[in-house]
Length: 291
Length: 228
Image (cartoon, rainbow over all chains, first blue to last red; front, side):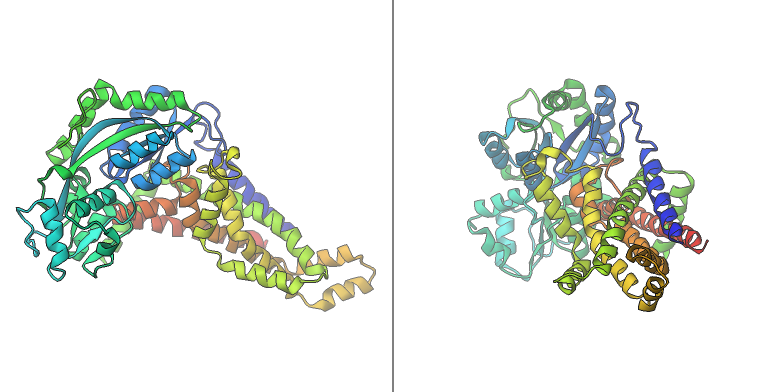
């Protein structure tokens, strides 16, 4: 009867091996457990939540006959993966951190490839009365009138989170920790852009979001843009090849792919059909926008 | 109730149409859990027997430690694998971080204490008279041990099923060390987490229903095998 146990084990092993090999052929005899012909990109959540990566991925895979693995992460953790050498390419939006990353020798070059703007979104009735204010004034008003409205922060060291901190700083609050812990109006959600928008919508709160993710999620949200003007709201996405990557050639292919005129044109049109508005403005070959 | 019903219909639709993403996630989930479970069982059956049948100092302490590790959190295992196997870690050169291999390793670490502990309990549950009788009839210590293992087979089987269940249903290790890459390391559970975060509640629930259905089928099959 020990046989029963052995039979079950054998069945499990077989199941694992058989199931594991189905569909894993991938053309070149690549097995489940061998990481060959793959390229890893760590991306800010917004480029994934908007569906842009899902749209570009198959085109790149087909053109270069490679499996593109996309790691969904905030810019903070994406840069950390790059520093540790776990990914080959980054697509992120946190300029100061990116410049530091390149200065420290982890990135070959920072190449801005598209931009859009951040928005402060909130409930339609704008309980805290932020309409018409600059981003800095709006933040100040929220902070100084804690009962008037809640604010949901990404709180995850992402590019959007660093932008939020930059706005607090520019508004005169140099001690971000003090803002973060100043009361129950400030909610630290610790999640990606899409999830944060959904939470803000549930809570009837304000949040800072990139325009692309907001448009992509708009149908599922009871939120509307409240503040959309101010040069601090500029949001530039860059692509960086990591120096620690052992796949420099394929990584450079991806960089060239994203910055090629054809793909830039597709990025510039992305979302036009579904959201009535392009989600990104391509910017390769132009000076980096500053406002 | 409407939402639940919609999710159920959607789950059926995804199964019937053999949806590519769902099939991929199911394949990854099943193969990784099965390989982890088989590897752990092959490791734990001899090890558990050894711990049970041998007398050595610190045995009770060892067993308590194993039982404490039942509640090893999945994120702790994930973090451990990350620190050790990430390129910057001591074993980074193996290049297994963010691959299915790392997921299998993580799940083995996760389920080994449970399986080991339950196998030891299973063996302890067998009446001492069984091996004493065998010995008195002239069986060697090894033969007596085999007879005890045979007596405990159902409980041992239960521990293997339990291990498979924990590996199949967990999300922390899979997400942290696999990277949730579609078609490669994305399992049913990590896909559910992603879809929930992206607000695709219905799809996430449909995946949950598929996961439970598969667990049901597997358990029925294993039970059948065991009864034969």
